[in-house]
Every structure is written in C-alpha cells, then in structure tokens.
Image (cartoon, rainbow, N blue to C red; front, top):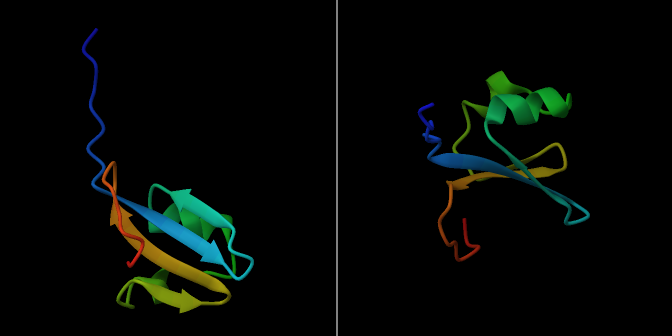
Length: 69
C-alpha cells in the first residue's frame, strides 16, 4: 500500500476575543463551524482580518512562525 503525502501548504487560524485559538484545514471548514463567519464575504478580504469577534489569518503548515501574521 502506497502512503499518500499531505499536500496542504496553509492552515487557517482563528483567534477570538478571549484569546482562544482554533486551527482549521481550510477557511470553508472554519466558516461551516462558525455560522457568524460568512465564507463568501471573508474570501473577498485580504487576510489577516478581524471580523465578528474573530481574528482570522492563514499561516504556512509545518513551519516556524514569528507570531506577526
């Protein structure tokens, strides 16, 4: 059996006002889990963005980050 490699390059990080963080594989999945986030509206914005009580950013998967994005 051939092992498949994950081709993901980015993940979506959500941070709410209480500093609770969530990591999602895609923006669409994050928006499905949080009805207050509208996918079609957010995709038109340049990330990182703060909307409806959530900070939303996209970061590289499996890389070190400085926390500025």
